[in-house]
Length: 335
Ligand SMILES: [Zn+2]
Ligand SMILES: [Zn+2]
Ligand SMILES: [Zn+2]
Image: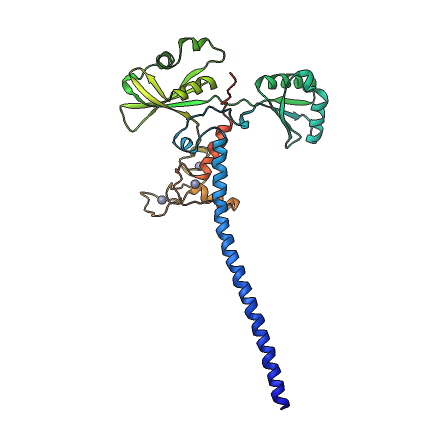
């Protein structure tokens, strides 16, 4: 009898153990499901990154579709990335805190009658002052130069002039630079525009197109003229009528397909735009892999997709470069 009792108690004990184990297993299964859910969420976060990138682009007054096709600047006030800035850099090494205090001591904004959108401490003791507009920037800059140039270097990076691309002009209408500029002014703008303050319109280059009877024209202009031409959308040039886009130059290496350098200076291996590998001859891959996104994933452990061609206009790496190039362009409205 004693034995039976013992056996029963052992069985009871073991049953409890089994119950506990079952409970734990159920919990683990739950956790695993959560984990799966999380990895789903992570791929969601890739989409978020891309969406953020797109938002970035759109905040510069461009619709995403336009960016992709070569774009058109909208009507709204351009993004803050284009605000004029003054950079104050100490000649001797010091904390940017001190630079900031020196600036605040030496200029009285209310006396100066100028507005500041932000003042930011950056590396190497430097301070960046984001100004309300160009006029304010000029006032602030000259005052700081007057008061502080003994100990500080004062600069304001100049933004590039915007460029415009006109596609679909017939070769028959090709002309000298002067002839083309005159045609664009007289057929689309007004003859008086040349007298206006800050007017600028210059041919940068002519590009060949697949259709040999036509060519593409790249022009540089002041922000105002740029906007007027883009708003016209279709531009008359002689007997042709071309289509106008905002043109932002992105420097891409044709060897490794990376950005901001040229093949002559490239130290990377050659990359195929379709499969990302270094090979001769035609690419036979069935699955695209973008070399830039692949490298970015490896290097920065970021969650983006790389299953597209390196020339895909939606490539997150390309969009990032394009966006930063746009930040260096003066699209200002106050001319
Ligand atoms: Zn390269
Ligand atoms: Zn390939
Ligand atoms: Zn890519």
